[in-house]
Image (cartoon, rainbow, N blue to C red; front, side, top):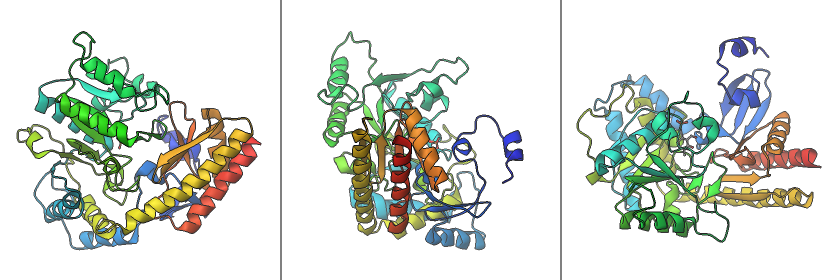
Length: 421
Ligand code: PLP
């Protein structure tokens, strides 16, 4: 495989190609193919970007039809027919059935762009600067978003510029099973001398993806919403990784029955892997003046076409979400067995997750890396997350056929047995 040019010219900053050092050429649903024709099962799926699989035929057709019609591809933030169709479909298929009313801000196309826009909006709307975020949270690596991201590796890479405007609180479970970490937050809010500036907003992931598949309890999320309401703090749910069906509902916060003031989506929003993000906001929070926040790529018309097609194809009824929940239980069951087996070998391990966002915590990044490297040798692409990369995580396409899901799980189990034995 010819990798010399790639190694020579691409910056040292590259990451995934270190774990999977082959040249990929093709992909279909949950399978990737490399230049030598070898196939891999994909449990990474663009780190949660390909919930509907690689080259999903329904979405590809929508994209090809759109291109074939010479539809507008780039139009700054012009009104286009594709944008109108996207917004109408979002309202009809996703928002209305869930009793949600939001206005839509189309920022730049990546997750961190959406987070920047969301926290800026919260500050503008509230006239306050402080954003409360949580331990192990990951919200992106541009300066504003990075200030709300916990991981030191990313925080230290600013060239010394201080990260400002945020305060970290302990996430659910951070202080141990018997403590409700929100007691601490609530105490600080109620104490004029705590040093916590009254926040404009709280930003939270309902399941922390990069932070190690840490799952916030539903009661904890409800209490967080209550605390925000009682203290005039906006609640931002960053659903960039956990949204678009990953946890078994379109929005991950649906499980808790809460209604965030602001929501960020990106990753799987276009459905096809095209760069695309939006920020949903309570209509009365739309305090932006025209053009006050801009960018050349505000809404991507090709992504409007595929995103609308994805909503129509998968979210008109609950068939798809029930199937995701079923597959989630398959992974949960197998991960529990694998974790129990690892623990029996004297290495404490545990399983956690919600829907098809699941992981096995094997206690150390070194062991997790050995497992994922072995899995790759055997034809499975799977990555780690967590503060030390100690969680082997499954983010397979939600559309993965059962046969591939079971094969991927078998490969993972064999890899664990070879590495841990
Ligand atoms: N927010 C969450 C919850 C994420 O998981 C990520 C990326 O993994 C981001 C924000 C940043 O998204 P992007 O990498 O597209 O900037």
